[in-house]
Amino acid sequence: MAHYDAAFPSKYLKAGDLGESGAVVTISRMAVEPVGQNKEIKPVLYFAGKEKGMVLNKTNAKKIASLVGSADMDDWTGKTIRLYASETEFNGDTVECIRVKAAGATKAAETVPADDTDIPF
Image (tube, rainbow, N blue to C red; front, side, top):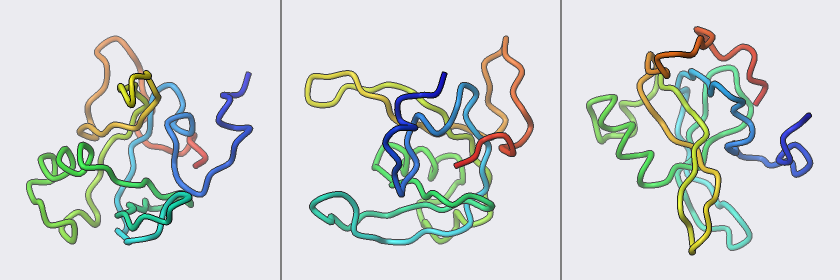
């Protein structure tokens, strides 16, 4: 059965778009765009071969900077990372979120595709 997020399409990537194993993606560009109802200006990462961008939060930006070895977002283009769905606390509720890890990082017991061709975001 489809994830409930499928009933609520979004211009930007959501945790529900990633599937069980997440996705290995290559950063193609970074843009600064108005996001959400309040049109707050935020950085958005876009990925090679994917339509949806990921609105970048500080937690994921710090992780990518650590993985890439540079805090300069211009240096991130062409770098490969793994996106995966997780959960976090927000305003007292547990909510789904997207997190980042090294492209080769997987759970020891799982078999994960080498690329993201089966993830349609």
